[in-house]
Length: 370
Image (tube, rainbow, N blue to C red):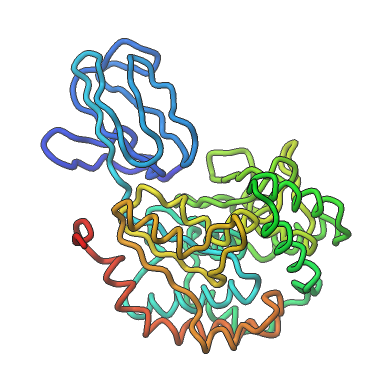
């Protein structure tokens, strides 16, 4: 569950109806409660809806325009609802082991300059970003995480994002008209691919991730249903454990085995989007850290997702590897020997990025009109 905290007062009458859930959308209420399935004494709770889900049924003649931050007026008992945007979201994209290293170095460097991205209200992680997100949300010390990236890596099965894998992904995403069907095609291929056993891969991730399961801070981890091609978002409210959720998010098709959670087989959340930054809709300040910034076919790029968030009224900054970082990362994002160089390049890039990040992360009030 999301970390509990006291309600925050927004003005004389408006309060969060679920202050314990700094989620995709938050709603406030004012006035008396109406009779209905969700009414309770003098409090009416409006169920949160996960972007981009369908509007929830709230009873009493309510209509909710979900999920673009618009809520209509109520018609029962003088009840009036008002949408309230979340404060800050950190989006961490995919990019293999070198992506983990670069993100860690960049975030540690920014922290050294007084910019604490780990303080985000929500952290949204995809693939490599889910590993970094789990570390940050669990309260791991950034300097220790950075130093771990510089140390010689522990022995683990080697992997390579070969041209065969890349070519298949490019071909499927570039020739399919329906993005969900395209992801399902990739999922079927992943299910048939020869990889290491799922249990062995789980042991690797279990050793890499913080102990103790889901953190108290809100963490969202993305994956894709291999059979249906649908986006799946895991958090502490669900039945999946942290190790399995992150394992699913990191299950690169054709490289690592799909992960079994319940009756689903799941693959890398990057099959939908390398960052899935659209899940930060409704937050006022958004920092997107994307080791891989390109989109393929229907796979929307972080740049386009950042532009959409900004158009909806958020302050947004997109961080991508600079030229030095691209050289340090190299052509194979799964190359453990490049990890230290990628982390060092990320930390070096922090100084150049600091002003743009600070303008978003430490800003007060809405973006200036343009």
